[in-house]
Image 1 (cartoon, rainbow, N blue to C red):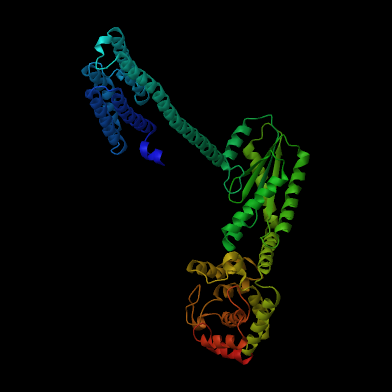
Image 2: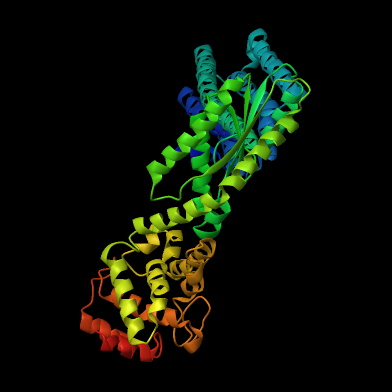
Length: 540
């Protein structure tokens, strides 16, 4: 954390800028290190003053870099200090600063990192040349290097400067290398992530997101490729899910999506692993087998139907039965196009769908009824009580016996739309949120659509839609009131509410008979038909 504060956080500073901050910190340290050396060796005050001045200047540059973030300005000031100020100090001090050439050599390599292109080469050449000239001058004309009390002190100072340069260079490049490696690893990570994203995008380009099968785009590419392969024998299957629209429109798209996934799994289990299976539409799949044998086609056809049956046995009665229509075609003639082969299989599939249509529809409705029973809406004593009570109330209200069969059917299936409502809402122990209430209210419309699709439930479809209307018009979904509400719905509303109040629910315990009767009387004229409430009380 402290290191980030001193050299700058990665989120705010580039790698080069952070390296510059490291160099400036080392520069400040070296300057005050030189102050201490000059004082210990007893050098003149000019030497000490020069070192302090350079240190303060470097500290100021560091402030501009880390606080004001003036990267370009700090680069120029740092290079000017190394290339101009330090040599001037050397000559001005009469050579007292014998360590200056070594410190120039210390900071000259930094230009290689901080600059680019020809500027890097020019700066390195200039600083190296200047440092060599100063060292030569010191060697050839040692009398020019004045201000040292003794030769020993001079060489101690120069030796310390040389050792400092070597050690500091090592430390500097170690730090720089550390941050370079961090940036390098980060770059590798970004590259790997980029490659993974690219791979994922490529996968999504050719695969269906929901099922993981090949999509329409890849199918079109395969058609082109196989169209050019005249010597390849090809078998193709066209498969369509029966009743998917019915499931989407009634139970909901989540159940429809689940049916799509189940169909994909059935097909994957029915063909060899390397078989190309495509989802080319909402409910349509195409299978292409290369170098297939005509004798195997019927085998795979039967295998699909067998696996569909197994899937239904496993998921019954919690899910709607899966049903599929299948057509296949085979070609070994070089003049038959892939489009023609697909069309032949598709025509066979549609003929099978037409042949199975009535049976499939009846089977799907039966599957929906079994799902409803499995979710405890019409099973056991609950269903029997509702039917018994509604018939008793109907008789008390003067309904003819011939109408009782429809009333019993209505009592049994009035909540069939709840198979389209999530268990999390149906079985929630606490109060429903407003959004959850709106979702729950959808079961009337869902039940209506299911009943409209089932011949045996069609006579009670309108009752299913309206069975939650209130006498005062505050019910749902149509806001009907009074006598506009079908008589059968007004009967069921009382019976269903009474049975609900006297039964245990996830959110409360059952009420007593007396309490339930009081609740019915309380809401007579608002939620319930008041005359039918009185009739119900009279028979209970």
